[in-house]
Image (tube, rainbow, N blue to C red; front, side, top):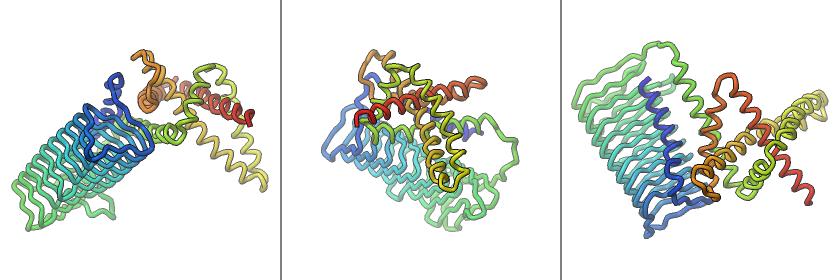
Length: 380
């Protein structure tokens, strides 16, 4: 339970922390963002794009979202990023808090490392001054950690040096090897792990404290933790789709938002019609052999459009809130996306009225998409 709450708080912090600095931020967006080797960025660096590479120096924090993030230079503050692939090979003067699919850390970190991902590799060149908390499917710990190692993983390999205790929960399956402590491993403290099967601990490994295995207990499902994690996953999924809309449709997205903002209530009727009419049409077509492919296409388009429509509405809501707060007309869409998705998806979770808010968000978004698309067709 403690680990789940920690994950929830850290992931929420990863989402919400940038919002406090929107007024004074220096934001860089684009398909490919690069800080050259001899370049020095003063203060915090906020970036969002497809590929982000930092070869130079950032004197403050790095806060970013992308598909791929590479940090080869020096970040004097914290690194707070979310991406599909994250590679940190440089020096970090503060903490590292990252979430992604594939994460590789092979540099020097002065303070803590909090990492959430599917495949996590802390390489042999990694030097971490404080503690490491890891949550994911697979963990390879080959570097040096002055503090302790804790977290929850499907299976883990430790072959580096841990200055203090190891405290891991291993949620292994039948194909997993569980926890492995290799002959090269050195642990200054003890090893406490929760797992169904014993860890594979080499006799040649140096262990400074006791080794204790705890068997997982069958506990009632904590529905609040399940609900909270599901909402966080939904928010992250929406943010990923929103990033695609912003960067691949950078010219179209603002125009759709303008249509919704200009005449919001006129968007409701076409949005309602599109949402209600397309499914019966697809169903009717599905009863004919010739119409089956078209029915599948319409159904797929309807599912994608209703989901994307909510994100368009979220971006607009985030934009309106930020404009009201900071009295600025030019708000980067990335921050409107983050704030709008968090606010709207939490509103969707309100009992009894959340589903109605979700419907209105879909209708607004679909209406904006239809109005923009029909206007483009008239100009052809």
